[in-house]
Length: 302
Image (cartoon, rainbow, N blue to C red; front, side):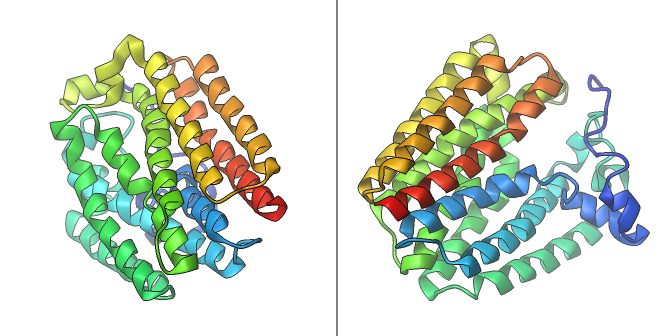
């Protein structure tokens, strides 16, 4: 095993506040690592704001926050069930609840069912069209964990799954879809290609050992030019999406700031230093929040 440190935070709020019996399940959901929830939630908020007449509906924003928390946990559970043998061979992931034996496979499947039921309870609060759109995302959620076995582009499939909220948010507001939402979805896919390639560089040595694929391995030392391309496509497509709905000038100011953040990521990240990769990966929450503010401001000024 190449890695030397577990990816489970020590001395987190789970250790201090959660009942001992619940701790493996909370860690299985990654509730001590909220960045994944943010990355799932932010496209929902972008699209909700983009489709709204002025301020986005607080009820929808809250529903999406709860739904992202639950469905990110469900996605992590599916991933860990599928990857339990791989995780046990990598030091960074060997302490994950299923790989370590703290949660059995059967317990994980039952827990997954409970999470999916809670996710459905959130989804049915939305209109019928949105329920159909949201349910369709499960095909991607269940397929993603297998992609690293068959392609060097698993990040593309993660992007398709993680940015589905760009379609769901618009549908929840309008009961339909619009080209702006589809373009925003495409922007999110390119965004994920960028940030998850950075993330994958943490594991590239272990991935070779256990035999899984990633863009970090495919691109290697040429990763930064590709990251620049992924992030450039992200910014251009977000700009097109904003133009399609006639966002006002504050949106463009915010988009420039958000683009600057992505430029900083590429310039500053050391792809051979896991700590640097993780920090830049986590900083994408800030990119996403800048964009939420930019869209809302552009709507109010439009």
